[in-house]
Amino acid sequence: MDSIKYFTFSMIISILGIWGILLNRRNIPIMSMPIESMLLAVNSNFLVFSVSSDDMMGQSFASLVPTVAAAESAIGLAIFVITFRVRGTIAVESINSIQG
Image (cartoon, rainbow, N blue to C red):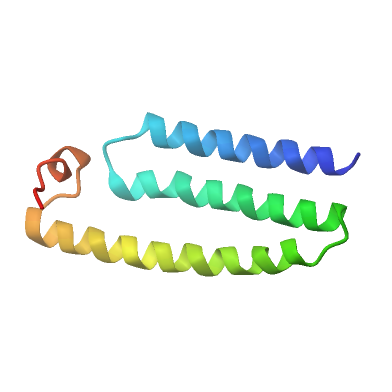
């Protein structure tokens, strides 16, 4: 019964993350922050499921999620820097004009 509080907390964080992405579509670095909060919600779900089912697999996945988040942030920051150097801005409206 105690794990329901943590599931509710995780659900609230993920809903706020989705809401943050949908609400702010102008600035790319600020759009990446709600993605990180959704990763936090997934991480807490892994931990709660692991504790409630007495399985260590969720805890091992929870230790890998920050590694993936750090790699995602590093690659995203590199893309932001390159885009800023080429375009002079990192606004989402100017990114839509990039042709491959």
